[in-house]
Length: 452
Image (cartoon, rainbow, N blue to C red; front, side, top):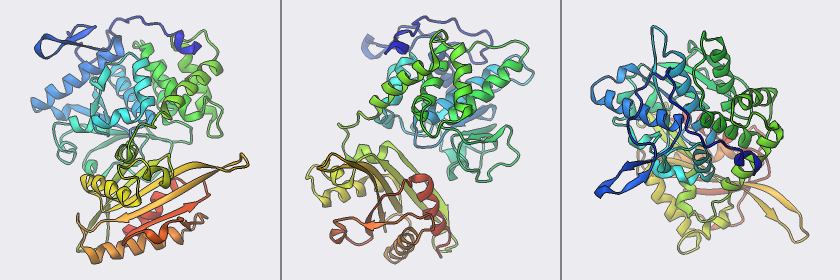
């Protein structure tokens, strides 16, 4: 891969504009238990990320959480959310370092650390950016020293990237800014900047805003090549190397500006983005070793939804996106049978504290004549052991089932070929539309919000 081979493995000097204290740890290794060493990332971006994480935790311990802004993407934890959050946090810190009001900011990945390697493309991109193995440079949800509902009240604020509105657990936080490429849901109308624009990648919008503000500064801060190349990686995989139907002018123009500052500046943009997309997409598809539980939590998003019901004012929804058919997923269980799929699923949703679970499967069906067809499935289950009893669960299941089957989005659902084997409050449909989570989730949420 010629673009990646051109990567310059130089260790750049730390920026004098950095607002966070620089790490005094050795660049090549950290002293581990019993005198053993483990590798640590090299380069300015890894150093800054690690030092920022340390500074945040030190300040929290000292009761100074109010000095911090958390930049967070959505809880799916894909490369776009991760990169957008890291990019904007870096920009906030460095662009204000020499001002009268320097900002302390840190990126938060709204996924637990144990789930990060369930996205091999993220691991590859971070490795290419010379970050510390094991993601020790990054702050994840399970590393937050305090529950988000409590912490959110203490922070200076939060910034949402690749995320139109905060999860309920962050609802008490002051929303400083929003940058997103999804539908505007009306959150924080006074946020600044507040950007909603169609683009293949939210990282495109974040990077464009960063470069616009950077170029307006009296003196530009240092932009590490590792971060620039991570930005290009995120845009490449979301835009199919700038060739997919989702690609916009903003994706192309911003990629040109980022490339010009990167270690790949002398290379052709199309070649770089094609190489990145090929390499990262190959890694993204390398999930054959994952079992069903891994697939369920790999791309999991959920939140609490308010309802009019005085008995149950909130209901927990969870959505999984899985690139395998239901039949193939069953084969990934210990017993390779239908009952075991629901047993594994029940164990995961119990751990996640979910009332209603929706699994969105997409796959290609191959026929004997060599043709293939893109198909999708929706799996609906409702539990009765978290916030709701059996009668309420039956009511919710009926409500959501009817909302999906009678949707106004033109999604024609057909019962799965083994639907007659399903148990109470379980349903699986097949459909041929391109509808994914962006269309299915609002249908479910609106139904639940009207449940009484």
